[in-house]
Image 1: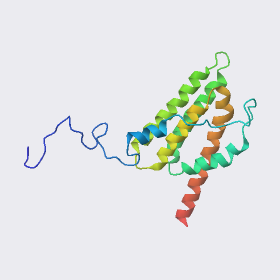
Image 2: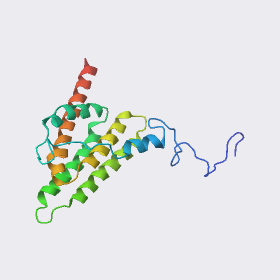
Image 3: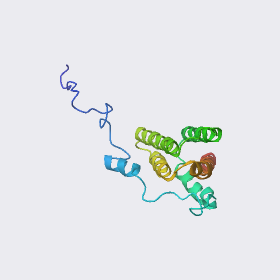
Length: 178
């Protein structure tokens, strides 16, 4: 060992070597991570009232625009990965007429998207947009209760979010070029 150089000690956390070994940026504590991934105080309301499965018009406009703008810093390719999973689940639900997917399986798939969003956030700790992505999927994983919530509420809402995300990114690109 060269003079002044510390010997490798696997018990001592080193930057970039496992849990807690890197720099703490972005969500600087386990508490912040837990807060973002905790079940929301209230569920997202996709429909006008409990008995109706008619989506609220504002979820496709005001709500989707706000969500798209919050996620605007995420590259479209990253967001499309999540959207592709959503569309795959939609196709599976539409094609499974003889053996429908149970509501619990639908909720499980959305919680998997939440876990993937949390992983993406952990990989990009210094970028607040990824924290918003984790918040987004935490809210919706707990809000979707079954097939109708997914097909009539979340999936078309997420489609509108993707559209507003693209619009927000296009306007940012136009500002850069001007």
